[in-house]
Length: 344
Image (cartoon, rainbow, N blue to C red; front, side, top):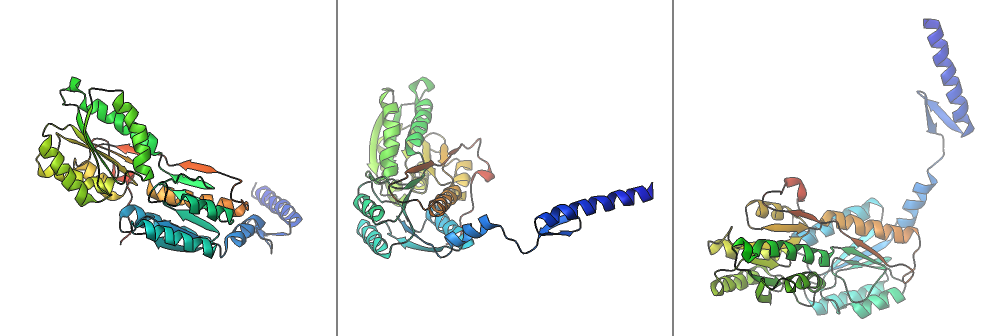
């Protein structure tokens, strides 16, 4: 039996070696290994991407969302041999327009933009693509379509937020029905689109009264002051709807200082940094919608790579990738729902 087993194993090795030899391969420990051949698909992939330039024109650095995008872009671009650079508009429309103009003249292989408002970069996006530069818009849409968009479905977030607020603030539940909306910038895509989703729902429920709808320019301190004033004017307020999470931390602080945490709701959304899970767990947010910033960065890079691999010419493709949303409340939030942002 022992000799038979040895003969059987030897026969298998001879058979495997014969199969390997057909592909000019070597047999090592019963396994076929390449003998001087390469994965041509892999070679083509890296050769196509090596040295390609990707430029990101950000709205503003200095917050968890932007820091995470930047860190992921750097890591993912480096992994495939691409050259990555960042231009920070620092919430300045003139600076962002100038950065866009400079990028068009530099002619990168991929241009990623986060428009401060829906009209600011529209003409320049059109000119960039006419010049042969594929543009991927990130999270804040312009009125001008481009080769790609990756970002949150803000209309859907607005709908879900409004549904949750209507349910929580209904007079049938003993609530006043009074709510306040604090936007970032009214002409920014995330404000504009969230209102498109939310307002029809609020209008369909006349028992819900919007007592204030103001902009705080994405600033947590301004949001805090606006919220504090609204709470003084409407002590029976049911909820705030803040259109960006980091800004809405100021709203949550105002509610806490007024001794109304647990009585006045705070609904918001963002990319899902650690602060969001912590603040929700502590009751600062009533419900929070995360659009997963690390996943968005990966989607931008995958779309950029696909454009380069397939030699897509601007104007021949318009791809939209909406980010899956993760909703959580103080009762459902888990640590795994949020990411730890890079150190800044």
